[in-house]
Image (cartoon, rainbow, N blue to C red; front, top):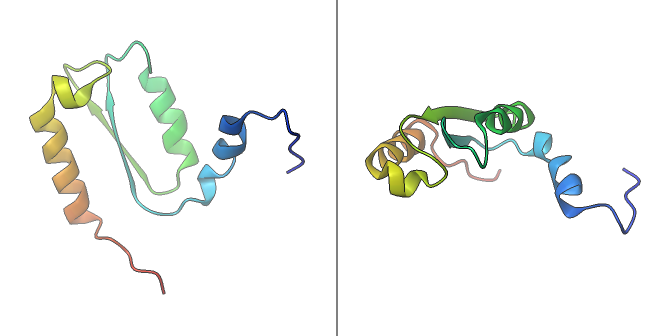
Length: 87
């Protein structure tokens, strides 16, 4: 792509997301006002192996608001998506 020196980093990086093919867990607070869940849906569309899990009764800081829920989501995700080794 013809990026210029003034192209923001986030724009260059976001264009590369569809090429990231590893499993991704998007644990997102449904009630988050700073980062609305609509952003999570957009991100999930860009990442081919994304799993979006809305977290209830949480806002921006899921690890603080729902630590047990987040821990369980991570453990379950890692168990069902074992690390892939380079060929």
